[in-house]
Every structure is written in C-alpha cells, then in structure tokens.
Amino acid sequence: MKKLLFAAATLAASLTFFGCEKNQSLELRVYSIIHDEETEALTKLFTAKTGIPVSYLRATTGELVNRVITEKNDPQADILLGGASSYHIQADKEGALESYASPLAKNLPSYAVASDNTWTGFCVLTLGIGVNSKRFAEKFPGTPLPKTWEDLLNPAFKGEIVLNNPAASSTGYIFVQNQLQRLGDEKGWEYLLALTKNVGQFPDSGSAPAKLLGTGEYALGVSYLHALAKYNAQGFSVKPIAPPQSAGDVDCVSIMKNTKNLSAAKKFVDFMLSVEAQELMSEFTFTAPVNPEAKAVSGSIAISDIDLIDYDVQKASSEKDVVLDRWVKEVK
Image (cartoon, rainbow, N blue to C red; front, side, top):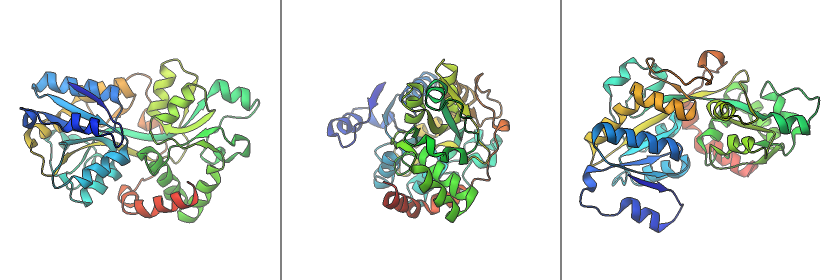
C-alpha cells in the first residue's frame, strides 16, 4: 500500500498519488481526513478482506473538501474518508458526491445517514474540554477545573488555551457552531470573541489540541472527547471533561461523483459501516461506533454520559461561509 503524507502545494506528492499506473482503475484512491495511523490500519484491513489495493492522501478537512469540490467533474480520488457531516453536506451541495444507500446503513441512527444517502457516519464525535492536570495545578493552584464552556472565559487562563482554527479544521468549526447554536448568534459571538483573548494557539489540525495538552505545552484545550480519552488511557496527564450543552456530530464517509471505481467505492463504504471496521476505529481513536452492534473500546466516553445540544448540521453547513468570513475578519 502506498502510504502518503500530504504536503500542501507539493507537486511531487500529487504526482505520486495520481501518477499513471497500469492498474490504476482497479486501485481505490482515498482522500483521508482521519489520522494517518488509523487510515493505514483501515485501508490495510479493507485490502486484506477484498483484495482491492488502496492508496490514500492524508490532509486537513478544509484542504480535502476543497479538492473534492474542485475536482468534481474529474475526481482524482474515489472516497472522502472522515470529516464532520457539515463538510460532506457542503460537498454534496456542490454536486461532488455520489448517492449510495449501503445495506448496512439501515440499522444506523437517523443522524448518521444523509437524507439523500450521499454520506454516512461511521463514528460519533463530541466536543469537550481537555486539561493537562499537572500544568494546570502548577499554573493555577487552588483554581477549580473548568466544568462548563463559560469557565474557559476566566481571565487567568489567558494564553493557556489551545483551540483549533475553524477555517481549516472541522473540529474548530463545530466548536464555533456549538456556541452559536446553544447561545444564539449575538451571545454566541460575544462568547467566542471573549474566549479568543485567552487562546494561545489556533492550530489547523484537529488532532493538535489533544497532542499539545499531552506534551504539557498548554493547560487547557478544546478537542473531541475521544482524543482526550485516548491520551488519558495512554498515561498522559490529560483529563477529559464533558461540559453541559456540547455539540455532537459524526465522522463520515462518502463517494465522489463521477468516480471510475464505483463498485470498489461502494464496497469501502460497506466496510466502514461494518462491526469489524468500527471496532478497529474505536481501538485506535476511542470513538463511539454508530453501528449498534459494534462495541467501543474500554476507556472511551459513552454518548449517554454527555449532555448534547440538538445540533443542527444543516444550519452549520448553510451558514459556514458567512460564519468563517466573520471569524477571519474579527479573530485571525
């Protein structure tokens, strides 16, 4: 299998991924938003089960969704793997996705399946607060750990919070929408602009906040709970906290419109919805599977233990350009 790390605007990487091969039409090509480690494990398992070779290109959500839309008339990949539903909705509105109703999707919860079957969720994503317990105790002795989103506004935390850049990261954008939808636009923006005064870094990669907490570079961060739970299980000084009124979404898989490998692409979607693939994903990421027959790894946080808002993914998708335009102008 060709294991490729994405380098933005690097011609060599593009030529390697899209280079002419005698059996290119038989090879499944994947744009992957999920981490390299689990992408490799999942694609290897898929190849082992089906005999279909896979090459993949790993990059951030914004980069790959833009590529999918730009290439919609002549797709250079067959599958978009990962990314919250609002990004797949965006690609669908641009006519870049193929409709496919997998037989394995019939038992999934309604929030995990697009009404037009252009995307399907394979694991649940929920936001939370991460704390590096050691650094927090050193920096803020006697200060209670934050339990709510409002607690992050404490002026004492200035420079000690890491938060994703929503213009590049689906994690960051869900956080922005979390606040806008739970508080309303006016109060939501007041909260966001106040919070950014405490933020020390806005990384593009969704995985960065949990990593930076794990290495002790920041005391606090906003991340998916599953990423925080994974670092905690690995022995890092990272405590995951599930504040009330959090947003939840699903990591999705979709097929490119006009793909030349439709049969193989459908098989990959079926595979991602299977018990075996979702339990493997949970082992790597500590996510909660959407397949009701799949079991989450020990140490992950159950959805039943989280207070979630009624997250409107259609709203998040429809106003994305307007919201991000305001973010860029007022924050970055």
